[in-house]
Length: 333
Image (cartoon, rainbow, N blue to C red; front, top):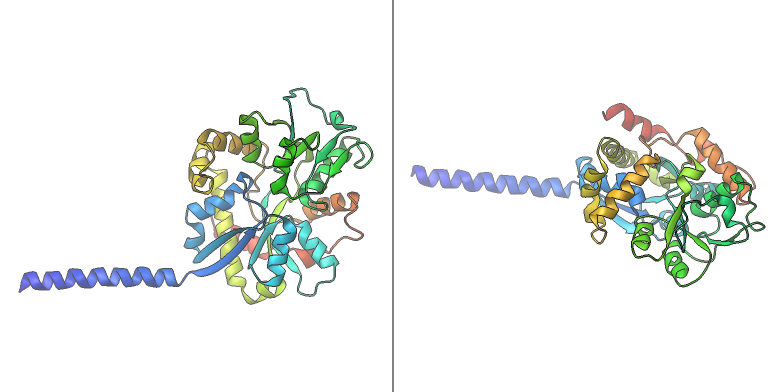
């Protein structure tokens, strides 16, 4: 009889644990996130995924590759996705177009440009003046990569369209193949693609756009104003998870980060992952908190104006909110 009772208790406890687990899983809020591209440049986001920070906050994340800021923004505004991840310039454009339910940036991830200028031959003595009279494949016109490329060229005394041509006829996914197929004299590429092209001997990094441009709010999270107002708790939980990822990356080595995000880049070798992460860490690529500051948005909008993409600047408080980032910083140590 005692043995029978023990068996019943064991069965009951097992069933209780199973039901508890099912209930916990069912309580997760599902979020669709569209990222502009899939790159090691966004390591803190992938750390938040693989280390379970989103689940700790009660979120189940579905990650989609939007393949371009314009497509990411279309997904957000149409309600196909909940949150977009791309350059803050996309939200500035939408506000200036007079969209009533405009997109609002609530968290920043990257602190500068993550692309690298690549040539067909190694050039350890490269200077930006070397691109004079050449063509650079630079991404979609008005996108952050092309805008910051213009910003760097102007800071080095070169006038885009006069001293150097920028090819804006293709999306980022097509650019490496086009360059290796013979188009352009230079191309800007994200990691890990840049290191993989180098390893294959197809192209070689000659300059870092991140080092050349300095700090600029390059990639951030945004959602529709209406979604933000209806789901503030969800946005706060999302921001908390991102901040945890930022803190984790800041306090761990390139080797540890590479191991953590390997599931997101299974085809990249450990050596490439480690070298790329080390490169990004050294140039202060990743912001250490999620707040996009007003002074940084001013730098970005000035770059957009110089590139001919803005007739007027957007008010900071109309396209950015600090609330969620500041709350995350206050509550998470």
